[in-house]
Image (cartoon, rainbow, N blue to C red):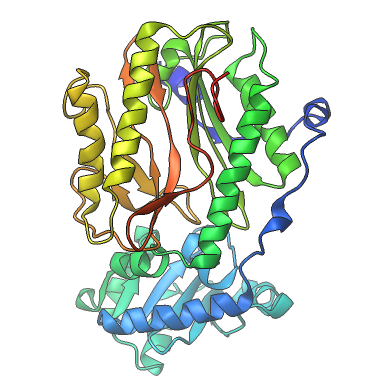
Length: 414
């Protein structure tokens, strides 16, 4: 069962085969229709982070390779047992902590193409990085250190020992304030990523044939993404009863006419993620029960969207969707709608904050989320519909098109 569940989980899409790329020869690379983030924008982000740190009582923040480092510097660095990190100070300046033998490679990378630059503090193999980093912080007058939430525990613990546990704390609020609210450029990239993802889904749906497996459908998505200029694509394809488990729970059976098909997929444009789920009946009339479930899920998605307003708590949006599903007779709580309504989305596919029933995070203009209610009927089928939404000054906006009916993944009913 565990192996089957793993096989059904979403995974990075495989490299597309030449014959699959040929199927989508009509699709054109659209990655140039919106500009990537510039180094000047990243420098401004570091200054803004400095102001956030100061307002929250921190003198600096430490992070390793990941979304926040990329957001601030366009630098990526793989994880190992050796610490390589970026430190941003409350005055907006920054420096790097790096193994001595990697310093020259790091220097070349941070100085390339107008990169972030900055001093590199080296540590050698006979010592751990914590004492050199603590000394560098003290030299700069930094006492209180924020830990970027994804920093591994071994490094956070080491810094707490080096500086004192009362001087080190999690910097989640600072990161949410920094990355949670997207600016106009980020919103434009996220919108285009979602639009292109929906184009890929529509193009894939035109290629579907009876007998295709979930794996085969995922490979088609990979080819469509490649043609459209998106990167890092992933696809979860669930057919029939497998869709009753939100992330899969059995090996997906081959596609048949009349199968309920659930495709949850996304990719990246200029480092920003898309996420879209479509559920529909393949090439056959929609059974009455599937029709009712689909329209209930759609109504729940619309109710959640209508509940989004600046100043409201995230939990109220989840609650709005859940009330619709309960009123339709599908149970309250997590009986058939078994997961939270949605997650933040940006440079990470899942990031803070979240649309869940316990979140008291206040919605602010520029925050972006998935809106993805579902109903899952064990042993039969499941329906989930997912779109990306943004909080606006007086409500919400959505990116791309809404799914119109359970007969097709996008556009108007067939």
